[in-house]
Image 1 (cartoon, rainbow, N blue to C red):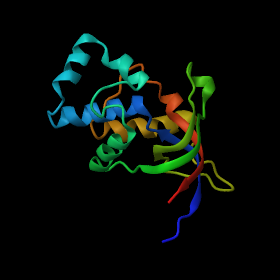
Image 2 (image 1 turned 90 degrees about the horizontal axis):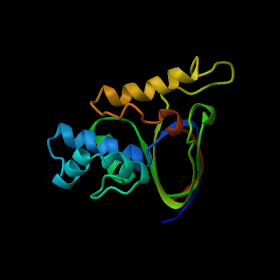
Image 3 (image 1 turned 135 degrees about the horizontal axis):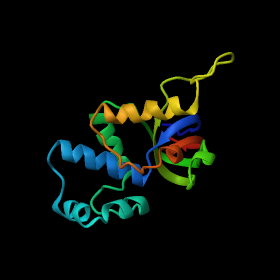
Image 4 (image 1 turned 135 degrees about the vertical axis):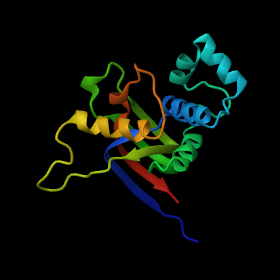
Length: 165
């Protein structure tokens, strides 16, 4: 069996990082009424949000690979690479106070692609708000809730690099 390295490029995609993973998994577990007691305690004490932002939640709540499983169950098209080398950078840093610039070195990457791609003569979206709205509707239509202050703009990223399989 031969192993190959493949290039990966997404001009704009929703990056499922540890923070986004936390809310995807939490919403899915709330739908199933299977939120662990230690997570409920963090929610009640107000610590969940800070731990989610830091990627420090217990169980698998900060794990993008666990979020990928939940996205599959909810029929949200997502992609993953288990051995990704590259970078994910916020497409609209001017719209966020904390733009993402994440380097990956043989790491697990999960992202949700845009439903439309530009071609030579036409833009895929009329404006950036239309793009963000697409991702918000993907989640809201399936009962996945993010907090009101979730930084959507930071999570719309350009992803480039390579993966090995």
